[in-house]
Length: 164
Image (tube, rainbow, N blue to C red):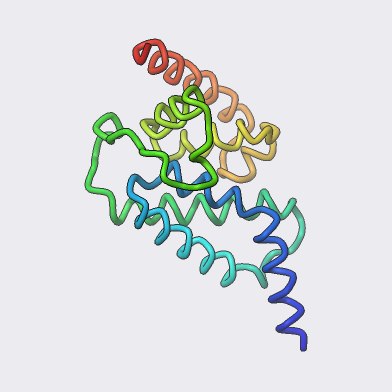
């Protein structure tokens, strides 16, 4: 009986926060099939790790940590690109993201060109996570988050200027 309660709790939380997984898949994968594979891999890692979720942080923070670690680990293994600048533009294939404005799509394309950890930081910042939550999720200091965000915003600004 306890297993079904744990499963129901897990499914309810994933349902509530599934947009987190979709965003990460969108930013870390180029092809629809890769996004689907990463989504399944993230779900599997979340399920395996769920019994160890202690509630010391918000579920969404914990979910980001597991999902980002899974995406970063997976892309290390499977990407053939060594320079983020060589990545192709990401087509907007996810039905949750297909209705985005052209400006938002351009922003996501710019973010897709960032280094893996920088993608994670800006994604969390765009989700209005505090510097403390970002630091906890990524595993860096709050000061490092601040420095990295300034640099990331500068890179994104340059990309967006060059795209116009």
